[in-house]
Amino acid sequence: MKARALIANCISPINDFFFPPICFSCGNRLADTESRVCRTCWQSIERIHPNDHTMQVMRARFLEDASIDEFYSCYYFQEGGVFQKLVHSLKYDATTKLGIELGRNIGNVMKDETDTSAVDALVPVPLHKLKQRERGYNQSDSLCDGIAEAIHRPVALSLVKRLKNTVSQTHLSAEERNRNVGDAFEVSAIDRHPVNGKTLMIVDDVITTGSTIQSVARILKRAGAAKVIAASAAIAKLDSKREMKRVMQ
Image (tube, rainbow, N blue to C red; front, top):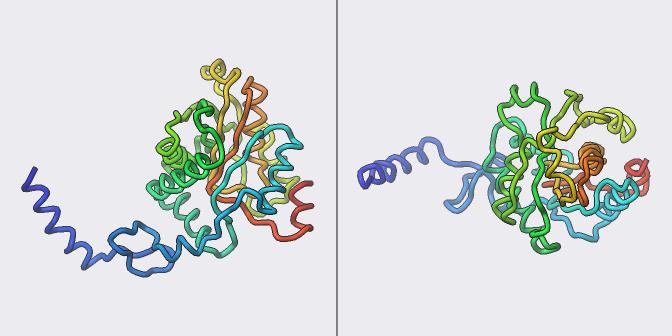
């Protein structure tokens, strides 16, 4: 074991010389204490405060629908921003360690704002089996792993299945998003019984209008869940009354 450690200590500086660790957002070299993203880029991402305008709008929408009882998120997603690069890497470059780190951040936000011991299980928003096979992983799974590390709650990976291989929601209106994810999910029959009377937390990477996570919440409520919490790494920031009206439609 000592020999292996000695070899690793010798090889690591050589690797760093030829392949220096750089921030995949800005391209600057990472410090020894940094991983994948430099401190400057992390600090450039706008953090969410519980009483922000966007959080108030989203909570009001969820309350009106009666599918989601509580909602937590960490960062604002903005076009062309650092977080967009993070999400792209998380979804398409298999950077699961980044997902776990983001998940820990979500868990820490929750610990500051609620009693996390009341959560019975974490539920990742599932991918369709074809998309999961294509990517080889689900980014929401790694977010759940990070949250689980922070709040010490189990992850129910197979509780919800995705039935429809829906198109990307990116350029759809709120109404189109609702249609796109309508009847897209189901609670697995084998796991239906543990849902009754439980408090479940659905986890996704980015929430824009909330249509996807609401669709999952509805089927959990229909299956008997007593309370559903939604959590995401980021949400799209709403800056105007027009945007607020669009999201609420």
